[in-house]
Length: 152
Image (cartoon, rainbow, N blue to C red; front, top):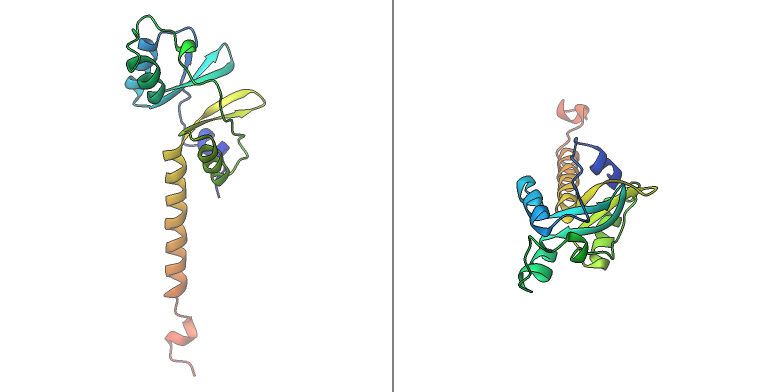
């Protein structure tokens, strides 16, 4: 079973962040250009929030606010559920379920390592289940060498 650290450190994933003092318009363009649904918000090296498509819709668009005027710090999600790199994928999914969120920042001693999405975790789970199915099929269809030669 993979842990969250192996997901964010592996596969040469980029770490996406936006400064809390940026405009919502800047954050939306940043997210759109990278085809991501959420971005971690920082002040210096410190994680201070998360800005997602949901935040954009609920706190900016639905309220008729100007994305060129509104700062990310004023509309970001600040009550974050945090994960540690040693947390398993199952623990990550459980934390997301409890917090009703789809993204979880992974931090190691306050250092931001990356953001994991529910999609990332479900992909890992599906890959692991596919491997397990292949292994079970191999086991089920295994014919011992002595049996194949017709040994009595």
